[in-house]
Length: 229
View 1: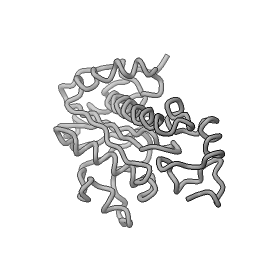
View 2: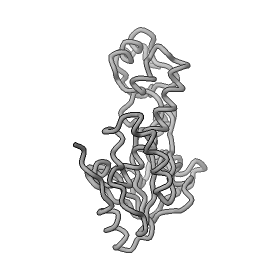
View 3: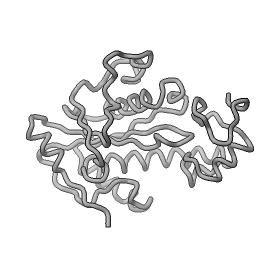
View 4: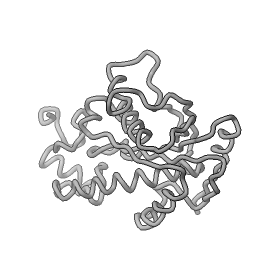
């Protein structure tokens, strides 16, 4: 039985002075093709509990589809941002995550003071020393969007309602993108594997090589260095 989520962490952050907290979660980080997607769901002190919202990985596609409208009604504002395979190749996966997250934040109708991320690593805040990617890792027009506080929480996608809600929205949108792309590249099985390294996907890479939707800067299984673009 999956663990119920709660707003315990979000409410603690709200008591500490934030008026708005945004749970964020990424989908597609480990895929071989397609975008990386970041969902966002904003809550405040008046947001009611929703303990049946769960991390997208433990839900069936049907359950996610049924839950998504409820999540959008429940949250003060929600959005999903994407960064393409080409952007992953250009900026690296962390820069692409930051780009997708800031795109999601730019679509919100309210701007949170705190973002709650799953895991230990704050990939949203640009590195202090900067990098060649930092200018292009903010908003789509090159300016940073979020300059508030970022809090990381291990297993937040399993325990924090706002992060679980964000994961569901991101998963639904990215799955739809990969299903659409599967019609253009049917040999790779993206409708089923969503761009991850399934046997069918690796077999197609071995036989046909990578497409324009693959992360070509990665060491793709089944693709020799001589075949790598």
